[in-house]
Image (cartoon, rainbow, N blue to C red; front, top):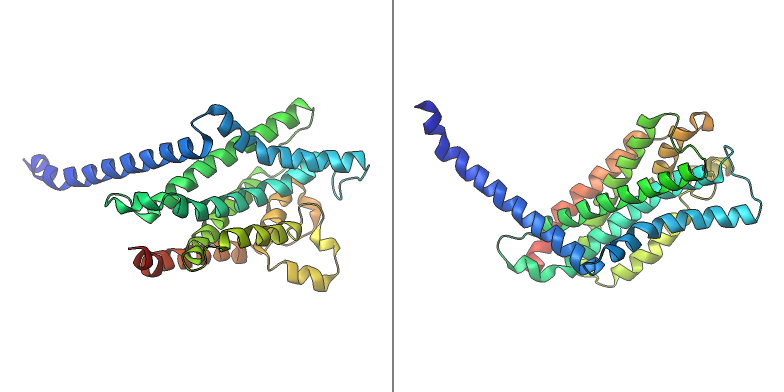
Amino acid sequence: MYGSASLPTSAPKRGRMDAYLHVLHALILRDMRTRFGGSHWGYAVVVLWPVTHIFLLVLIYTFRHVPAPIGESRAIFFASGAVPVLCYQYISREVMKAVSQNRPLTYYPQVKLVDVIFARLLVEIVTGFLGLLTVFSILIAAGIDPRPEDSFVAVCGYLCAIMLGLGIGTINVAICAFIPAWQIGYILFNILMYLSSGVMFLPHFLPEQIYAILKYNPAVQIVEWVRLGYYPQMGVQVDYAYTVLFALTAFSIGMFLEKHVVRKMTG
């Protein structure tokens, strides 16, 4: 008797969840088909692009006979820096582009801007993870052990890179609502962030005054965070609270602007 009385309240909740998951699944499929041409080759190119970026750096420094600033492997050094930075930058850029590319879908009452953002985020997380597995596979095939000394630290740094990408991406959505040209401006901004992040050098080897300024760049923090998993003896102090709070604050501000500003402008 009591079990049957609970069905009317639980059924609508399950129905709403099923409908939401159906919408999210449709958005993910549409995103992959429109961006990658519905082709496995198109998706493979997107996965392999950051992988090519990493190993191009390795080849350049190998041909120039430049040793890694720390450790014995150039590939591990560059991969441990480039993977988290590219993960953060790709997510923040693609989340920003998701809204402008899928704006007509939000005219349907079942689809919200947040759904579009979340669908693109899931696609980028899977894409980034496949790229990471590809990097690991290539390193293993080359006889290089890609496993960090402290896996927990390295994984936490990678997860923080994802969280930072989502936070910056949601703020980018709000900025683009006011300044559409920011999509191009953000590319230039990302170049500066990348060059100062420490992918190709160790920031703590710089003069203390310069290093103190660079530490305000959250990309520097996530690079050092991941690298500490590979080089525990590196001798840096990551500000974990600053990095996590920066990502969470960016996400909160972005969601607030999406709800109270962007939604009203586009409604």
